[in-house]
Length: 163
Picture 1 (tube, rainbow, N blue to C red):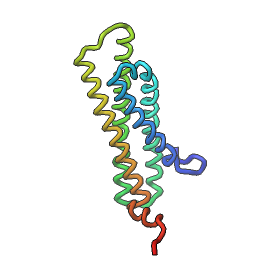
Picture 2 (picture 1 turned 120 degrees about the vertical axis):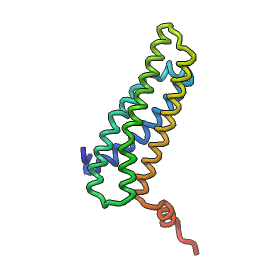
Picture 3 (picture 1 turned 30 degrees about the horizontal axis):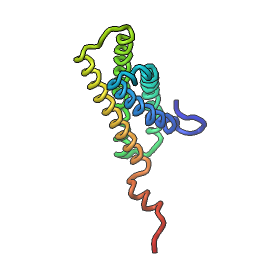
Picture 4 (picture 1 turned 180 degrees about the vertical axis):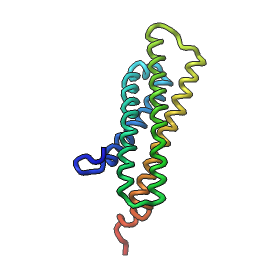
């Protein structure tokens, strides 16, 4: 996928990742911590994790297409390298969602989840969720820097001159 209605697809797809991945991570953490959240949102979390898993390689592929059409720079290289790593975070988020579904199904069938397992699931969700949010931030920040350069230059140019 290269363009959508004349715009580079990466620019459009990246906004889905920026919203869906952190949202899924936050919901997964909440579902791991609290059974009422898990009972209500586990299937939404699974769908969002699957969506993130599908959109991540599409976004990366579109980014690689775009990378070949912009001037090379250290900032673009950094963004590309960070972006390539997002697939691992998407896979980890999908694993967490799958584990939450398994826990949910066990609870619905009247089976208890051992305390050690509950702690492990919660810890996994927190670590993967926090890491996913942090990585999305890092990738987005590097992409903004690659596109716009130093943000202080942008804010200085945008502010009205004082006399």
